[in-house]
Image 1 (cartoon, one colour):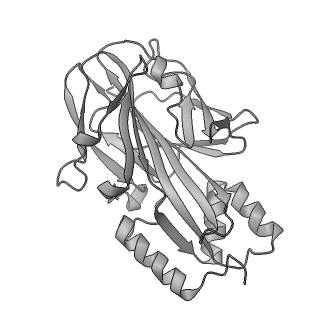
Image 2 (cartoon, rainbow, N blue to C red; image 1 turned 120 degrees about the horizontal axis):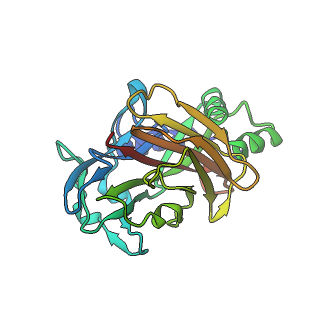
Image 3 (cartoon, helix red, strand yellow; image 1 turned 90 degrees about the vertical axis):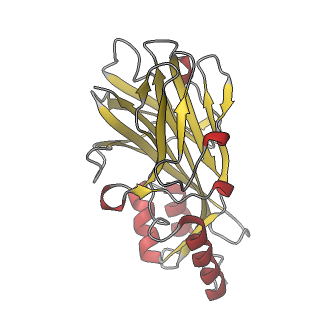
Length: 279
């Protein structure tokens, strides 16, 4: 039997795992990001933050349980890493944590979940999802084996960064350096640099290497029913966007790889980058 032809028992276990891991209505939401109340704040000031999932009418606070968080930290312009897991309050009524930094400059706040969550989709839904997100490895693998008509399953992780500007100016070097996620959007210019650049070039890395052909989307979080702009990365993993002028923004990208004999068909990573301006 094909590894894509998942047994009923496995499907039921998968659905149960999804319900426990993600909660109702969240499992199929692709976008996931860190949303501080303010992306720009004074030195030593504190801002609450939430983890958001889904866009448009599906947007809500994430129900990611603490046990699934394997990394939550901040990288300074000097390359120092500050563990932020003690400030997480996932599931609290008002916020999922608070951010505060004692020195000026740009900080990269990073969160990574484990890959314990799974999804199981019908052939039609999986094929549509893979096309929508530009998941070429999944489309090619299914086509090569003649499996487009069969259901498919994946395990997935969520990996996200938020750019937080503290004080005026300060070093922006951290923004343009990778932080070691398996799928990562790395800006090649800081949106907080002064004067603000006209373009926002980014590079997508997958398992440490430039990723060609990935679909990168830019969404205005105040009007998030659909991305404002989207581009596929070139042969060097690069894509370019117009620099937003204000508000809160999120970039996201998804990638996957086929698995063999691991109980699911693909391992998928949902990755994002959020940032925003006070004006």
